Image 1 (spheres, rainbow, N blue to C red):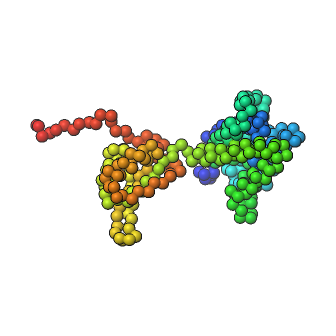
Image 2: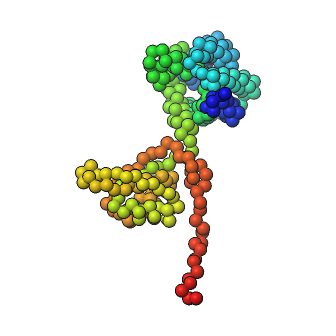
Image 3: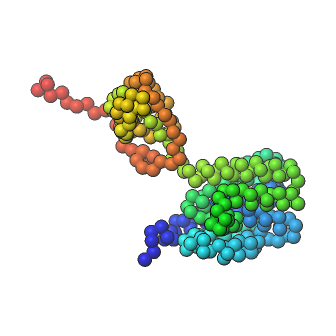
Length: 301
């Protein structure tokens, strides 16, 4: 019986298709016309194109497939299928966008080209990574190094990307390399945002002598829930309740004011929450009516 986490989900494959289409479009219509290099195996395909005219769509398959065959034992069944699909999808879209090009007129502005290249690449591959996919290449090499030699994937990927970019100097100059580095930075930021999701939030720990009052106000005024933690002061050794609340960034100011109004001596710690799933974030929390209902006054009866 196939375990749940080993199932191939059609939604994942659809998102890989969309992500690789976006990434390949930027590669063909932004990177190549503006002589912006790339890291990893994709960067090698651009070097081969510049020096020999070898089609990047074919080079993507020629370079990636042997790497996957070498590392297939490490990848596992689901990762192997997803990686192969990502490679073929990327190769297909590179071919399509080369056949039907749509180049943006950026008036030879390399700064804008670098920004746009980073945004498009980050958005495309960010989608692929978020749904558990990869486009092969140096990811496979890095996994082999990690398993065989204990070298962390992050270090291997960085070293491989730097090596490929240095070799790219055979066909681009230092100026274009600087804009390539700009694109790589933007790419890394966009990938992070895409992977973390759109539901960023703030976790707030409130150490106060009035926990019940704060929780009541958070619920009635902000329509948010809260949790209690049993804590103990390291100096006084007195047990107390610590309040934990998760709010959106836009609600943080309101929460600060609420805490200051109830307990000005409260000790508050605000944490960045990478992703928040659940009521009020990925689905709507109950909304308070615009006009509060007035309970009938039975004392007049």
